[in-house]
Length: 289
Image 1 (cartoon, helix red, strand yellow):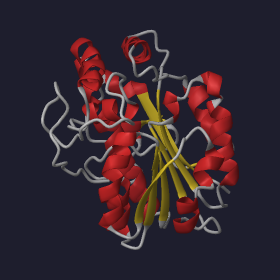
Image 2: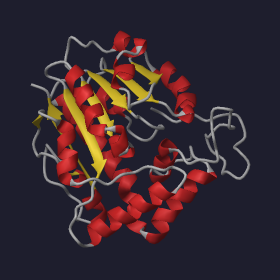
Image 3: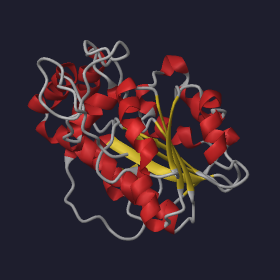
C-alpha cells in the first residue's frame, strides 16, 4: 500500500501529515495496532495516543525502535522469494496495516507485474488509505474483515473474485497473530486458514518471540509485552518458539526454517551484526503439500 495525503487538517494535538480528521469510526482515545506499528516504521499516520505507546517502549528500550524495520524487511524478502522462486502470483495479506515503504503488492509485482494482491484489515484508518490503493492498479485490492474469523476473510466476495482458490496462493500473516490472545484460540484460527488453503500454497508468518534465555532477550520481550498489554492498545503477546512453530501445523517449512527474522535469508547470509532486539522476532515460510 502507498501513503496518501489528505487535504484535511490533522486532529488537534497531532503533527501534520497524512492522517485524516477523525471520523465517528476512528477512536483517537485508544491506541490502534496498525497506527502503533506505523510509529515503529517512522510513519505519520498515527495519533498522540499511538505515539504514547511507542515512546513508552523506546524511551526505556531504544533498540526496540528496530522492530518495525526488522519485520518490514523480512516481509519484503519473503514476498520476493515467494514471487520469484516459488512462482506465486496471488497474495492474501491479512492484517496488512497502514502503507509503508515496499508493500506486498510492490515487492510482488516487481517480480511479476500480473500478480494479484488482496489486503485485509479492519482498522478504519487503513480503510481511508485503501481508497487510494484501490485506484493504484486493477490487481491490488483491500477488504475490511476480521482476521480472527478465517471464514469471513476467505469467503469475502472481493477475496473470492480476485484470488483463485483452485491455484496456490501465499497467505501473509506478518506481525498479526501475536495480537490475538490465547483466549481467542489463535492456533485454531491459523489451522482453519491452513485447512482452507489450496495445495501448493504458502504461509508466511512472523511473531513476537520470548527467547526464554534468562537474559537480555527475555527481559526485552517481557518489557515490551508489558507496555503493549497495559496500554490502551491492549495486545502484543510474546510466545515461545514451540508455540510459534505450532502455528505452521503440518506445513513443510522452507529453509532456513523458523528462525530469527534477521537470519531468514534464502538467497544468502545476513549482513548486519546481531542485536538483542533480533531475538524477539521470529518467523518463517511453510508450504502446504
